Image (tube, rainbow, N blue to C red; front, side):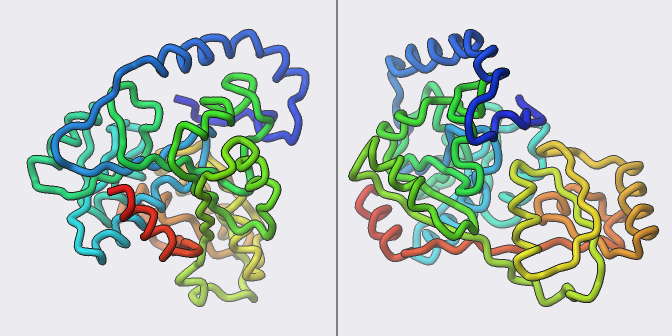
Length: 312
């Protein structure tokens, strides 16, 4: 599993390193080719939705999984989240367990069977588009509008698990972020599949009033898209005097937290992190640390609900 994305992956155009690594993309190409012949199947009478990505990094899969649980519960569906167990992803598992019914297993099929045995109507998968054994009633590909597809190359030359044209295999797109203009991204997607459904979402802070514009802030995060976290705070004109970035899913040690608090004290700054990071901090070490609570807003939510109902 990739812990730290190389910076050249998210350049607008490939650089010499991308081209140098092109021969090493062949295993990914071959794997994707043979995967296309693999016979997948459903398990039992349970509807399934998958939120996955072809871009490695933060694409809001977990917030979207939580949001779809909330939407479908209001429609009287009994829902649950499915997450493949990774020791390094305790943060996402805690969030999903706090905000939904979670079935987490080293094997997604077994997790789905557990949900089926508990009479779940709709199982929502956080990741799993490339799972060899499962098919889904609805498959969403998630993108960040800020990073889009990076340099457009496959791993390890770039951040893509599959080529962009693979989106035509899936049912719809989620495009998430607070960017002002996504028209070029939507145009690129519709050149591949002119009829593909694209649902745009954005982050809306729900506790921004807790933070004072006159204070100085140190921010830290260990998420897939730390720049979006910072951009959200800057949008509300918070005075960020120091930013500390850690690798995605980073497990904070006591020395890390002590260092963060020490630097903040020297700068006379208050501390803000993400909710995903906050849940990883032991209870006894959360003093002086606040988190930005966000809601993921789906534009044209009624249209999304109609689309989901038509599929399940």
